[in-house]
Length: 432
Image (cartoon, rainbow, N blue to C red; front, side, top):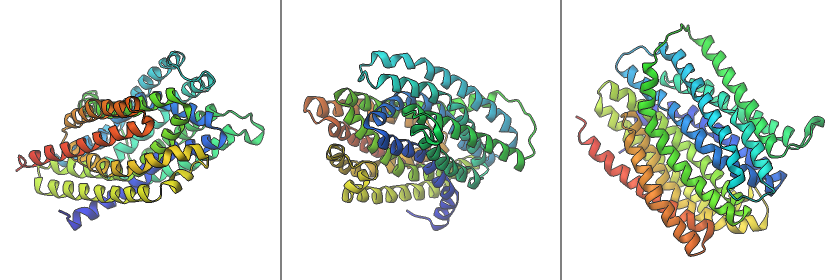
């Protein structure tokens, strides 16, 4: 059921967040765009490097996404939340140190994973430099989540768009050696990411200092609350990311061209996913506030409206991918062999989109309810019990390669969406 007033409030909060989420993912799009124009090897090297780094990066980042629903619950309980600024800042810096250290420690693994030897030096250099971008992006995301709890969303999300253009410009500067600089290839993409993320993080820090009167407040129990709520989200996202990156690593060992195709397709799905993800985050804030205030009637209205919006949006994307696959892939490459492999896969991805919208929207509701363990359990079962085994069967046993893995993942996401919907219905029946 749709509720006009609730839909309007969700969109008012989500619209800047959609822009911001698109900004986050468009940084990856610009990397793929520039890498594909440099060479297929550069594109493959970046895809492989990110298949390793993103598992670690997203795990830490997902912890930070617990900040806005947690603080929204506090607001619903009439607890002042401005004082949590410095604890949020400290938590983000601690996470950046941990994640950067772990990322650097994984670099030697590249030598033993069996990749094409000509790609290994570029992969390792990219990973080393890109590890330090965590400091900028963790600062930015933590402050964005903090402001989001106050429903201050316009400036931080517009800042993300600025980051996209800055990153694209720096990509060309470093990758192709503009202004007399040497051509850096894949590592140039990493330097562009580090610089653009640090600049946007610092700008948002200055913005917060200008709009708020901030006093130092120490509360390490707040760290524990973030971890308690965010850790299941982190494990859920990690299991999802690991599944995706296992696929990339498998197909890269078959042929580097499959890694390049997977990079393009994942980039397209990430772009489409950012809109329902932003709406899901808006729903988690609204549901979190109503949950803290014990207003379950409004809570259910926000939940049902958000779910319906996300599914409709992903149905639109499904039609785009099914009807215009050549144009979508052609935006990144004109390579005939890449197009031949990618187009059939993207047509299958169209079906995947609908269930992806269902699961992410319901996940936002559960975040607002502070019940994040169900998301973790669902991700594990869907991807590791259903998706990957089925994908390996089609890809390796029946020689379907990349499209075989996508068959498995599509079945997995459908199972996840349906399972979460059934669980949410049972949960709502207990809220009175």
